[in-house]
Length: 430
Picture 1 (tube, rainbow, N blue to C red):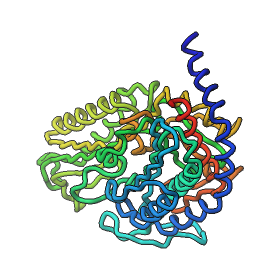
Picture 2: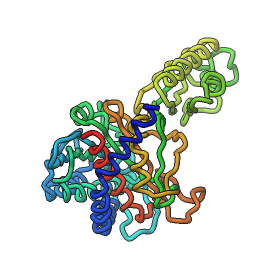
Picture 3: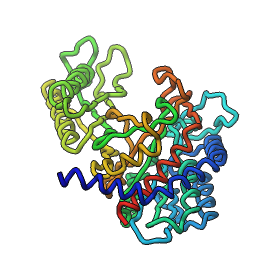
């Protein structure tokens, strides 16, 4: 009985203590909605790839300084950290927004459509905010303005993390970027809890989605090189065919999911996304190279999948008389919402979105480097609706596509929920 009463008492006390702040937050957020939309359109029209967010970072830093917030620039190459100290002592609450765009050429016909181009991975490409990071930056800039306007009433410190390179970068010699590098540079050392959101093009405006525990998958890059013995295509018995061997390896990798992973606990994915070998129709090549992605929802599951990938690839290759070199690069761990923090903030999310507007997200096999912040301190990552009301999610363009589109009607809710997180958490932990 005591275990049930404690959270209820905390929620009750928090709700009582923060009643006067929520209406003020709502009023301030509504008042700057047009400004936030204008910021978002400016950033959308001027997108920058990971670790090149120079213009965006300056825009953020200038805005934070204008609010009297202490600013640190050049964090993790182009990141910006703002520190707002409240009028009363209390915990440090971090809020995160990612700033980078994607190598995608925009097709959406907008007045603020991106026409920016850049060189990415050795190729000329358009650049577009095709994942909504422009909205994340604008919303957090708005939250900074809202909370700076009630600085004296805050019971703690707010740390605004404007993060570069969430989507990763292609740069020789770089082994750490984005959230991981910010963590390595110490931004989380004094933080008590961290919150973030991601706009969703296929979730209706006005809705918020979240789940406790694992929420988004961890992601790893997979590279396998299969070595054989080159031979004439007319006499395959005189060599070792790495193409046939690779086909058997690809089929074998799928048994990891169907026969090794306990999919009643959480799904996993092993995908081979590209394969290359050979140059002529009648030559069996010396080697085949394949690349792919691995998605898992926890360290134990990740270790199992990695083990089986190595065993299957090397053993199949050896059974054919060849050899397989397997290289798995860990990128982002699974995004895991701290269960206790998630339970405590559930009433806050409901208060921000309203009855009937809070959804339980399914497990998402996409990945997010917000997970690095959560590995340091308790964190909660939520989804914010960005699809027009009444839209059909099955017909709405998804993230990372040229037709990606966000309805701007959900920005006030985004500001509201992040601001509520701050004041409510501070009220619980004061």
